[in-house]
Length: 275
Image (cartoon, rainbow, N blue to C red; front, side):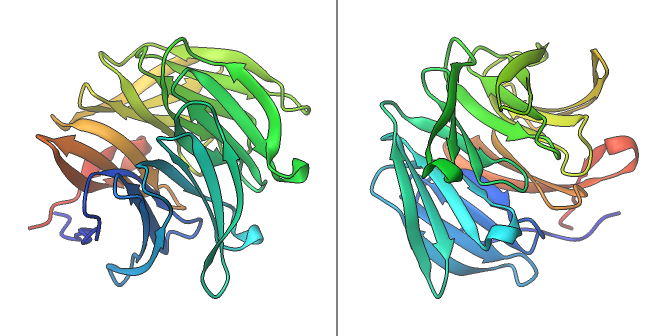
């Protein structure tokens, strides 16, 4: 029986909306309705940093590749996307104001190209090489985008939405998106989707139906290889660098819950027993 516990005191004063490991899995960052980003040392299981972003709720955050240092991007209810870099302290280096709320953000692996999903169903790509201006923008869903994720080599971007769909977009050399797959497996709003960090064809998703679903992409086929029912609304999913730990943030009767799973054989995941 697994006995390792990954419980951490969040330090937030209200609902947590997102959690993400850094590239090495040494740090975990969270953001929430209180407008703060909190940073934790995973091995010590304690908070080591805090950034007050704004008074508006923060919906999403992400880490850049470590070649750029410790860089965090976050998005908020009021539509602002903020980018911070850790020097002696966390410094705001850029921002972008969208017309509607931005629910999710993620850097392309090994690039400072930021994908952002909006409440009106658009994906926006912001490029550091263009002073964080818009590189591409397109209508990905007919309703709110709740989550998105690049695969390991940056060739695919998965998006999920209130329309209960997951879409997978393929990119050519000019970053122009083409719809490659549509996945219809969830019974309710899909809140997050994440590619396995070491496997381009393993995709995990979760949402309001309470089920964590693992999919395998085989050429033109999408195969669902595992379903775990948590009986709570799953808001966010986070892998560590090796993909052997998967953390979910969910909500049950107004209370945030964080739980970590461990990878078993064939990309099956099991809950870590805290006893």
